[in-house]
Image 1 (cartoon, rainbow, N blue to C red):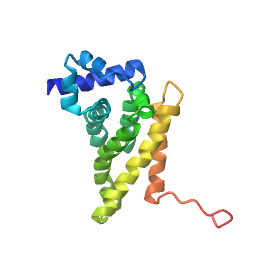
Image 2: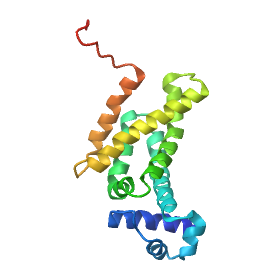
Image 3: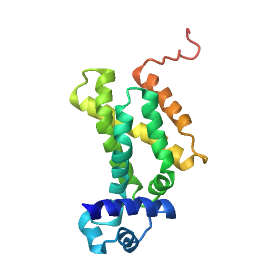
Amino acid sequence: MRSRAALMAAAVRLVSERGTTAIPITDLAEAADVSRQVVYLQFGDRDALLVEAAADLVRRELIDEATESADSFAGSLALARHFAAHSAFYRAMLTGSCAYAMTTTLNGVFSSVNHTAVRRLFGDLDGQLAVDFAAFVAGGTGAVVNAWLVDGVDPLDPEELAGRLLRLAPVLTGAHRTPPAGGPA
């Protein structure tokens, strides 16, 4: 397990430093002080290592903090601060060879967390509808976060992103009603 953790830490560090996912397996293995064969045995290929490093980083540093908070702003702010703190890593990941795999994997991680929130907000949805809506929220949130990370102006402002995410909640829950154009207010 030490070699797996060392490889994921090396992946985050090297991708962040170099600003790219195009890092040779040899460099990743050397940075983790393991053989190339260990990389292949543990992960299969470089992209799988990078995707797992991103998922591990989110699980270790974000999921507990973001989900333990009963305050929606605190949870959204924890999410924004995490991605801002690791923006060099995530920017490279979102624009590199494993962008789709990483986005899909992180959507799955966040969908499982969102499932509980969806049930709390909307009550007794049937099983598949709850799963689909949790995936919908994760994917939509991911799209906003991804655009902020890739296209945002440095330094990224976590408070601004948290506010943007929170403004979406009333729209999703139906609490925000905009009268139709030309209709009664």
